[in-house]
Length: 512
Image (cartoon, rainbow, N blue to C red; front, side, top):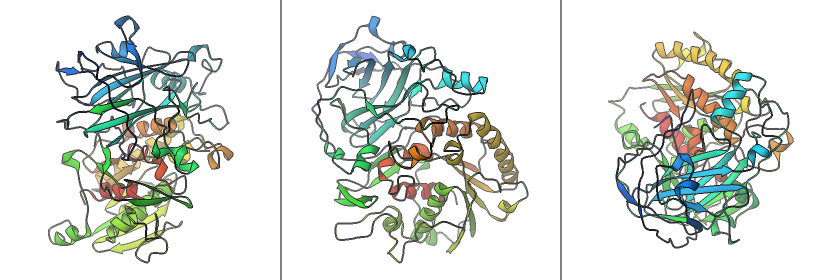
């Protein structure tokens, strides 16, 4: 799986609007953005000099001329300016044949805001780094169709408030564009102010007021989703690409049910599967493992340790190993079944409960111990008793502890030194990135001043990705990238316990 650029995919049904095609050709090569240490960069393959037809979105002003085009898209022709709410400028360039493109978004009044120039870190180096590499705002750009693509914001160096979102669609069909401003004026990454960063969820693409069917759900579910605009694009061909990014894709077209907190909601479809690169695609099954037990590496002891996100991953792993991945982890059910999510009343499914746990399933012995800050990671310590170590930390430092980036990097270095010791000892290590914390504008995060914002977790994960050693026995599970499009499936507004964990489990078991 690519470590540098990931777009997240989910799947659902939506009410599409017919696409209007615009003429013209453009050369889609992409421009390079200046980056530095652990700055998230794009890794999409780009065609070399291939002429492709540009597609005109439904809601546009007019074809922009070169004098009105941002530098980040200057090498592209036939780009279109989308209708936005006041003080924003959005320009999209897209090819229906390569099914890839760019979306440039600029908040035009950012520098005039009195909060723009304030210090955001007591560490001068960090203050400069965050302003230069991540900028003041944070957007969610989502294309919803046969897949759901959530494109990472990339701050354009040398600008005040421009962000570039590169995206690539991999399935034929129509996609609806939705764009939200989540944070502005550095609110999402501020390390000084001890106040809860207000989650804006401002739709910046002009809308007609028509709401898609996927939005007619519970208020919690609605709050997790990015509301559709009236802009659609179409992927006309099945792109021939060895995309280095994962994607959520439809895995069942049955009418299936899930539950958000206490309210049952239904959609068609509801079951997704995470598809990775062909050479990394892996699906573990109890039957296949038993069939190959005589030729595999024999008994495996797995330690899972960390915070509650790691505990959730532990129970997903155990239920998968017990052969109940479909029912207990993927959460496939039908209208005549009452069991949902954790299935606590189902005898075959283990419920996520706090504390230390041990389970032996076939050739696997799996252990969990709580250690939110990995304080037990010591060279020559208890980790040495296991052949595989699954761990990670970031949620607690980013939350109400409100660690500055410099402190997280310092403690992270200590953990990396510990992991180096166990790698030399022949252990296999799986590092689980901090998953997305589901969005909310009220409730727990507001009351305790929780700082697990998308940009904070994104930046902490980038720091971890840069610090972790490159080693054949160390594998990163990109949990944030895999969960950022799935926040609406969390049953407790904090953790994942459905098909998201099934994919975590597959990646933990890969290579074992």
